Image (tube, rainbow, N blue to C red; front, side):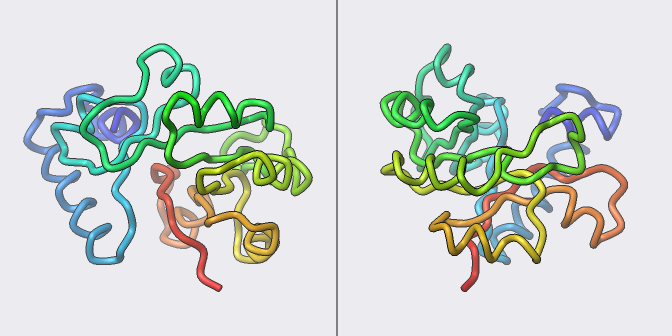
Length: 174
């Protein structure tokens, strides 16, 4: 919610009527398309917006613990050794990143399919891949056993959006 509110000139003003109207439209599109509407990092905003799920970066999950009232909580893992900790902290979904080089963060080093496989080998929770996911490499993610992919810049480019949309969890289609 923070990035979107900022791009609207309403940074952090999650109760602003214009922001709420946009979030309601996004939630409706997600529901219509069968895509989870997930807020990133801002637990109270996620509650106010009626999100069924929230994604907390692992450092935030460590600091705050698993928030109550959500159907599921996701977190990111950037090292395979973080999987056990993330699951002990209550993560229901893991996002392994960056698997491929993300266009929106060119300084990030792609970890590759060996990293994804190492995360999958350790995980009990579903694992989604993030980072540089496009049609041409999503097949490799599915073949590795990931539950799906998170795409940002690729979808934004397809739709002519200037700034990447927030990550969405999307089950891969086989």
